[in-house]
Each structure stands twice: as C-alpha cells, then as structure tokens.
Length: 443
Ligand SMILES: *Cc1c(COP(=O)(O)O)cnc(C)c1O
Image 1 (cartoon, rainbow, N blue to C red):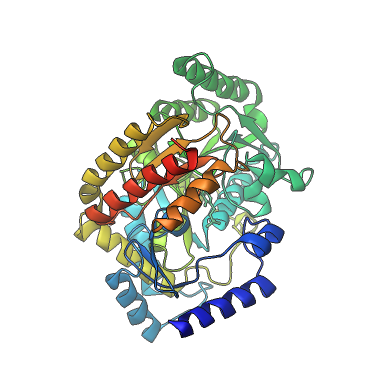
Image 2: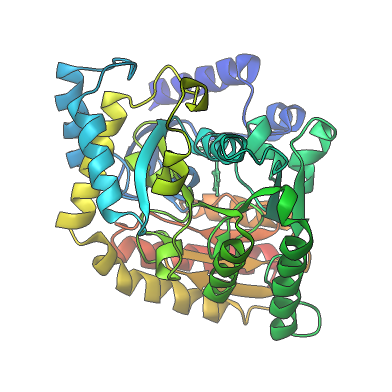
C-alpha cells in the first residue's frame, strides 16, 4: 500500500509537471485537482493505483460502449497484432478493412454504400465536410460553400469540425478563421411552450434553405441528442423535417452519429430510428468499443459517384493510419458482439431504469429539468446550464467520494454508461447520482 501511494504521488508529480490536459484550465488543475490515477479497467469500473474503484458513468468520454477490456475485444486485438499491425491503404487492402466496410454497409441506414476510414470523431466529420464541399465543386456548383448547424452543436475539434461548433467557449478564440457556418435554433422547448419551440426551429431551417440553399453545401446534425452542449434531446420529427427540406432544396444532409451511434440512444443508429437516411454519416467513439482511435465516414452512391471520372475529381485525402488493421479488426468484433450478444435488446431494461431514475430526480429541489433517451440520462442544475457552470463539479466531487466517475458538462449532470453495465452496478450508479445531487444541492 505504501508503495502504491508512493507510485501514485510520483505519477501525479510527473503529470502536473509535464502534461497538458484536454478541456482543462491547467493553472487550477495543477493547484487544486487530485486526479484519479487509473491503472486498469474492467466492465464499467475504473481502478485507481490506490486500490479504489469507480463506476465509469460516461464510458470514458462515450467510447467504451461495451465496457472496458471486453475479453472478446482484447482477444481480437491480440490476434490481429500477431499478424499485421499496420499497412497503408494506398493501393493495398487487407481483410479487416475490406470486411469491416462490407459489414458496416450491411447495417448502415439505407442508401449509405461506401466507407471512408479515419482516426476519430473529428476527422470523421472533417472528411464529411470536405466530401460535401468537393461534391459541389465536382458538380460545378462551387458557390455551395456554407454549412448549417444547430446552436449548441458539437462536431469535434479540428478547424473544420470546430467551425460547426455552437458551444461559444470552444469557438470564440478561433473567430475569423473558421469555415462559414450558419446556426439555427435547435428544436427545444421555447419559453412559451415546447410546441412553439419546435415550430420556431422548423420555420428557421425552412426559411434558411428556401432563401439560401444556392450557397449551402450541407446541413449537419447530431441526431436526437446534442451531446457536448449538455445532452439536449429533441424529437425525431425534426430530423424527418430536415431530411425532407434537404431533399426539396437539394442540400446534403450529414448526420454525425459519433456519440449517438452504436446503441447509445437505444437503436444502433439514432437517425435510422427516426426513419432518416443521410447522404453522409460519421461514426467513431463506439466504433472500436473504446479500444483504439478509429472512425469512418459513410457516403451514399450519389456522393461517391460525383468523385468518379477524371483524376482531378478524386478525393485527395487520407491519414497515416487510415484503415488501421488493429482498429478495423476490433471494429468487426464490436459488430459481432452487438449481433451475437443481443446488446441492444439486453439494454432495454437498463434504458427503463435510467428513465425511471432521472424522472424521479426531477422532483429534487434545485433540479431544473431532467430527461433521458436510451442509455443517456441527464439533469440540469441551473436554468442556462452553461458549460462553465460550477454546480456540476460539486456533484462530481460527491460522486467521487461514493465511487463513481461522474464528469459533468458544466451544470448538466449526466450518465452514459456502457450498454453492458451489470444491473446491480447500474442501480448502484443511479443511487450515487441521486445521493450526490442531493448532497451538492443540500436538498
Ligand atoms: C465527440 C464527438 C465528436 C468528436 O470526436 P473526437 O473523437 O473527440 O474527435 C464529433 N461529433 C460528436 C457528436 C461528438 O460527440
């Protein structure tokens, strides 16, 4: 134990001296934060070198949909590593990349027939944006250059993907260099009524496309839930409306399933559950069950065909690790596990548990609004629930004492656990959320 504590202290020293953390005000981190020092993980649990364990309430930033170190994924990784770790996809192909593409298309929303690999959610979106821009270039409509996204959208961090980000603190430092993106109000409750909020959102998108479609390349949406801005959920009717407007005005529809894909909302793809097929779809995060960074952008035949013909029409884009055999082998095993272990059906009772728990927490004094969708439950601790809110962090501290890693989005407290979390652990987690919210609010 003394050794473990000495190791822990030394790792924290090295970390604070040399490491720059993502999304972190570093001055405050170095002065005040005692980080978890994770040594291993299994299922829904993270284990600190000090021997404590924590339920991973957000599947480690939404990636470990099948739990940590799933034995089948670990075995698939080892098998593939022994044969081929990497080779470029330049004039070369290999079994994991080719078979995975076929398997993805077979379960993708109808109409998506081609797969382009990249590294993570941001690059999957970057590929989608470049495909959309070059699609119109190849179609001799180069004036279609602008994108449309929702207020509060999050589509990743590269300059292109960040251009579509509607979370103000993430955007502000890059004003002036981002791509042109027009933001429309999300279909959420307005002050007056929910119905009015939807009507306003429909109308805004319709007006924009009616008046501006000639200069718009694509509408880009997170389907059914806007994750990073605070788990804002909206009705499938909006997606269907967006699809029909894009059809009417001949604008591409890009659906970003990076967070929602792989069963997070209860169905494999949120857009398909709404009856919507996009022209381009981005998948990452759950793609490898959180084992390795890898992603894909799926495209329709119409999009693909626009890149055929003379060489200058080709998509001159790629990354060193495009189609990485390790990632692809794991991604195939992820699909096999979904199929063979009935992951979606077996999550249904857990979906119900999350819904019930968050409905009940709505009654806690100080909770502004709670909601759930599939394997996501969320509640707001302040009316605006901004990303820089502090209340969520009080809940985080309380949950940590009780054995859960419950990282908030400002004043939004949420869970998005592995779909495979055991019933007993889910009960435990939901109990910790409730106790921690009460403790933090003094309710
Ligand atoms: C996380 C996320 C991204 C970015 O993915 P990274 O792997 O972090 O680059 C893009 N879109 C959505 C909807 C996301 O939730």
